[in-house]
Image (cartoon, rainbow, N blue to C red; front, top):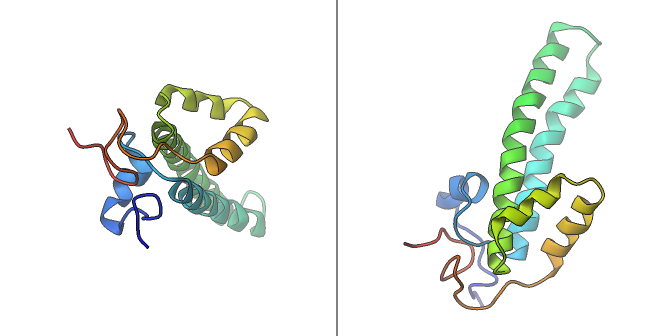
Length: 132
């Protein structure tokens, strides 16, 4: 059974999923998107730890990590805003993700609590951009 609550965003919406703040995302899309972002962030950090300190390759991996970190920071915010929208909450509450320890609790809450069924003020359906 493929309902709005179980349907993940299709691949044509990946830019929207990771970089735009309009619309809503389900718990599964939020968790899986966050996991992908964490893997993308962790890989260059892992590679950086394998090379000699101060080497050209180390500098390259540290730069790649920096770029991945900045992109993943925005992606985490965009995912959280859309998840909050699914709960019919304002996206500005995503700022709580910057508070140490509280951010872990917020992530768990966003992964566990179901969104509002049916349309809300942030979109008609989950896992798609809001329609004007």
